Length: 252
Image (cartoon, rainbow, N blue to C red; front, side):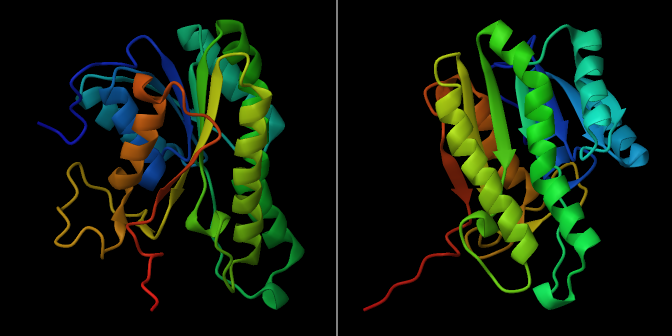
């Protein structure tokens, strides 16, 4: 049994595009969706990591289409969606997961760094949704899942640009959910807390104290898998916090 054995292949016959799919949360989401039966179109700038994720999916009996993509480039994202349609004839699920994280005081953050953070974390979501939306609307159903962050609702020092992007992504999620409510497309966000986004293991070690330790990427993937499932068909405009309770405190 693998962690992503599911009782029913509820994504069978569907196509999911996942950005940032080469490692961490994006890789874990891709594996989870493949185990649920989807053909997963993998997007990332790093070809070697994409190939590794695709190989893992193939080894588990799934199908992956790796497409090296600069998600901040409109032309590259348009080609990504065109490739997905050419290979599978459809797009059912879009997961905007690609992101960069820079820990630096605003006074030391130069304009190119600011632009890179905003473009990768926020503009990329607009580009992919804009490109995929005609297919989603034509099908009369679809799921858009944005991977936000605890810094999308909680501001913190030294991550001003990251917060600006993730707050914006959550705002986009809520507004777009309202915009698409009558065409059968749901729009939701997963908001991870502190997550180990680097460890690459087929079976992550079990937590000794899961609500006290840093999350595994698979913990976040489980939330995305739920939002793509039939059980979430009436959920739209939601932000699913996967914080491990680290934001909670008791005050007398």
